[in-house]
Amino acid sequence: IYSCCDSDQLDIFNQGIASLEQIIPTCSICRENIQRLTCNIICHTNQSDFSVAHVENGTNIVKELEVAISYKFARGLFDSCKDVLFPNSNVRVISFICNLGGIKCDPRTFITSLLSNSQFKIRPKIYDINETIPNQFTYAVDPKSHPCNESYAAYTGVIRECGCQDCFSSCLPPPVIP
Image 1 (cartoon, rainbow, N blue to C red):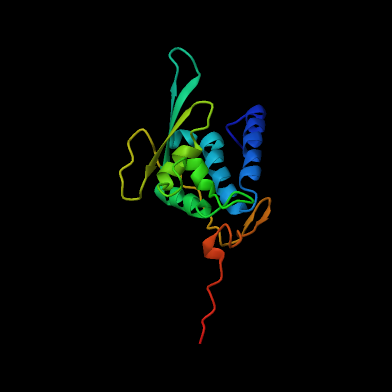
Image 2: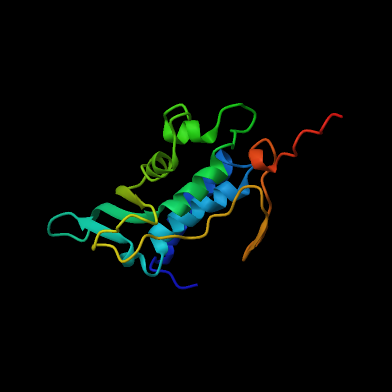
């Protein structure tokens, strides 16, 4: 796999991703969608098409990264995670990530909050299909997000749908009582 990241950067990325397993152990599709977002931002081979790095004066040190993200992906990522609960609790993960009690959390707030724990500032710019993307971006990154109720094949193996507790669309409808 070709990546713009060197092996040390990939090791740091893998360490950060490993913490998702502890936060979201029961819904691998939500976790994989978050990984897809961060991997695209950090290591996509064409990241200059959808991101602009702002560096400190006279250095190569990035102080801020603007990233154009499609609303379609943002919505799919949010929807795959919105029902996920912390293990052994009734607290939704989005409540913790958005830090707004979860009720006010939406795709834009969710992604902004996810990206706020970076070594440098990452400022997502989320564009809907009918919005004009500024000239500094060629396009908005739009990786495929997977719904939490559908298994899919990944290069690491099959990613299973999330259970009913973490993905309401996986729940069976109640029986019809005659």
